[in-house]
Image: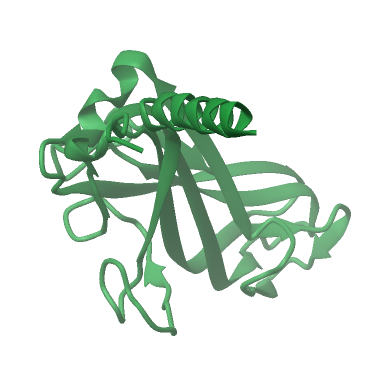
Amino acid sequence: MKFNMLRRQFATAIFLTLTSGMASAATLTYSSWFSTANGPNPVDLPRTFTDTEWNGVLETITLPKFNSNLGTLTSVQLSFYSDVISTGSLTNTSTESDATVFQYKVQEIIRILAPGTATPATIASAFLLQVFPTSLDIAFGTVIAQNGGTLPFTTNYGDAGSFASTSATYTGGGVSPYQAVGGGSMIFPLFTNTLTTTSISGGNLILTQTTGARAEATIVYTYDTPPQTGTP
């Protein structure tokens, strides 16, 4: 009995020593919004919409860098979300024919740029991620009368297509820009542009539109913690 007890204690000691010397995986998740009322990283609603177009000078999202003192960073997942609201009208200025709409779609190109990107940003500026929420999508076959016929529209938050999201995961050398000894913060500029796709028969349509957008970024750090050593 005494021998068996000693053997059990010895086996337990070996198990504790092996487990305490192993690294373990952990994650940290941070999210931040851009909106006019609250500025970067608002804590409370409302997260208001900001009129586009954005050039990244004032429109930014701030996220923490990974503190490399915590362990070895193995992957970074960056997710990007944006939604839009819009109001306006389409007016047919032709005096000779009605306008028949087969397609009239307006999307906002909303991009998150790498920290350190020169601003004001342009359509040629390099970006990390982009989404294409829809601010206007006229139904197929809609007819707008000649001589000033007008089609008013409103795109509300939550309407089909008015929001979009995407993500990317970085590993290996791709994680380097996202970490520093002691951590720190990163400022991501935001940029918007408009993409319009049309197919119309007759008429001469003029678009008047005001669009507002919001954006959120989420970053997930996956890392290995240093092995824990000690005497059981």
